Length: 554
Image (cartoon, rainbow, N blue to C red; front, top):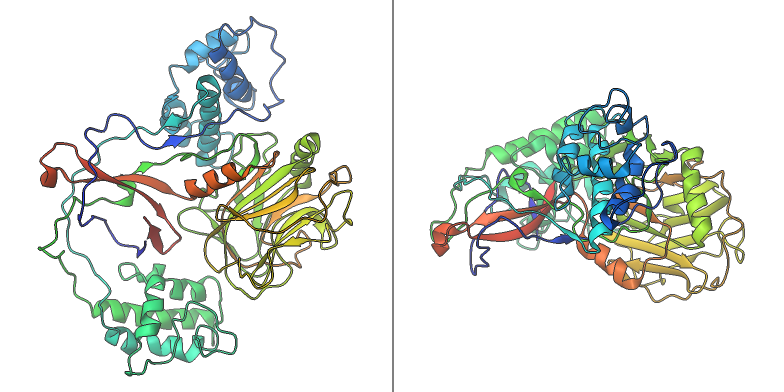
């Protein structure tokens, strides 16, 4: 269910699932071996790895951190020989012993090494969190390669917090109808109304219902209003920062909308929870345990964008595969809450051609690949709009994930296509596969099966006329770009929460696994029900994510 943001959460209990004790357990994560180590470290001439675990350490972690521009600059065996010297290059076995003092293979994101770098210790990038994410990937790869199984997230007891009062949306639309609705009806009904020439959901500017109330519009508007922090309301943000269909001066229109939302919120009285309900203790989202990885299949990822930075103009490639194809945000691109970017017309995120070349190099060596993205298109009316493209302009590309109205398009250059990747493979006309909602989209290609498309874990029944081709005619000078074409004339609008490029074609089972793993800022939340069960440390656990800047997903 999707809930409007609130200060804290609790659950009303109809049935209980108890977790006795919290010292271990949790959802498994699938770790993956590193695809390609950094080339910046000197060739190793020391003793051979003594065990299989040392070899896994060397391939997945040590080869990446021992270079001079990373941990090897200090934590080496020569100068300054700073302890723990886990990045020493003279003896992998001694480095392995030291690394085990600063990593947690059961919970990589909580490793001492990761937390130290996240806190600002010698990150080699401009964003400490990006370095921490990459280190977590390398440690997870080591753990997975050594054990052959996934790791587990360690559960810990949350703080005990009693449920308090909150502002809730009233059942009646009367207050909304007096405050916010007049602005929506006057200025948004030409699109966001079922009576519009081209109706666009949600219908928060619908005409009054037969009984004279604005109930239909109200129900569609709730998800766009934040009663506790009105400046977070989508109605305000769209005008203030995205200049979306302003009717006069955007700053003035935004102030007018904000005043109406504040007036609406001010008419409401904070309420206590119904005493007839049996409830758990309350939690803040930050009280949850980060569901790092959460069972994703990432074994062959060569570029990955999780958009966790939240500020600035760089979206970091956190795949851990060098060179990092970091992207520069340009034009009207803003950071979304819960990890992601919002792309408005004219905006894009683009990597350099030099860094993008690793995609060419690694995919050329396998002859197959996958594009994986979590996207939420802003409109169902779009033509030649590109979400993910590895290309050189609007007439030459290696691959592209695009949108044509309610169809996803897959353009691919191979030996059976033209240089623009045509003919394209698309979801069926009339099937309305693409929706203006968050969707998991995967495109795969291999020379045996050709192109395949998956949406929300399910393969779309379309046949590729280009099966059997090769990728030998790809161009290594192209750049990877999101939300547009490199030439800037194939603009797409919407939310991008995750993008990954794999140098293998994902299987249907792996696609489904990654869809079920979900996306974004995800937490395991343990709701304390000890007072109800009489059993100490008994909890009901939910996986919770910040769905976007305005709502949560349980």
